[in-house]
Image (tube, rainbow over all chains, first blue to last red; front, side, top):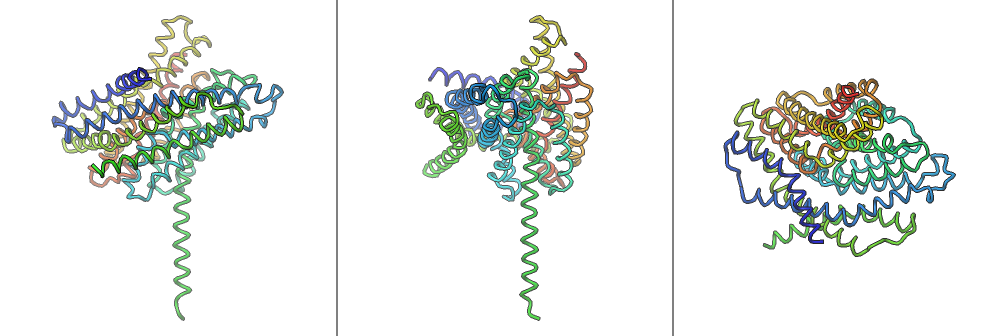
Length: 261
Length: 245
């Protein structure tokens, strides 16, 4: 146990080392300034390092094995039934895909970081929880649809191109300030927590469904998980915008009615 | 001291809440759908405790270390006024954080296996290693280029959606001409490039730049760097597949 932890910290240290080297080089030799609040910043980096290592070690110990096992047993022919010929027989797989997509996204540290920043910069109009829920709903829909695609064997690029068209149309109607954040949230969703579980689901599904190749069809779920949050985050802002406008209209009519004639 | 303890307890509670959905989903499907008992309950609880502690520390460190340093450096570069150094920094940050990314290494190796099976490259250890390394280099270059382009966009104040639309059109066109076996990998490589340490840094850099340049809105101009970093790998990897194949 302790050995695993030390190993996790060393691994994270190696991952983070190039980043720290780049930061230090530019700060000390190009900007030529000492690091401000040196102790605090170093402590912060230490927290990030140890925190990430504990986080990954814990996931590897507690959730990944069970998640992988579950993805495997839910896609097992013994569970689905050997006669499963129709896409309807995979109901539990879609449900699991959506649920695990939602749950892993909520716990994704990179998304937490972006949400904190967005809430800070927007002065609270975008809430940390609102953004995270919107992104998680997008990932849930994306992974469920991605599983459906693997089951039916339809080409990946049909879905991606159709998704792009929806994104383009939404971009014209959504409030301007949400657009960069929506595009960013597509990239942050798929990180340390989501990718291992989703990849296991994709590979399990592609090796169970007759006529699918795990190498050709197992890929692609992550693309769904990065496309759909763009739509759901713009949708979140559109709904917020629409409700604010409706409330304003209501106030206006009420104000008119209240006027004595 | 009391304040510190209070803060720590609050972030511990937040982390518990963040983790609750995964535990619920896994428990529900295991007990109600697969109908098997939870294996190794003690180990699971210990692991979950580690995850909660780790997440708590990470968020704390984010606010103390990663965010401030990203912003400080953005202000520093804005004050220095040297665009060339800023762009070099942007490239180094994108390239340097991607080339060593474990998720990318894993995907590149898998992609090399697929390519060897399809006969796109020779079925030897050396050819596979070369292909995988080339793929990693391609993705790292594309992320470096993405951060540079994103920083130029913030400096100039160009709207983001024009770039993204143009990128999508390019992706769609290249999907038609690229060899089919590279497409799934190309699409996925866009998602794996942005790691948990890179995202907060790059976000803080973008927002810091937008805040320190007059006339830029941090919400409109500061975000968008990650969007570039997930779009360009698709284009570069499909290009790589076309050149190799």
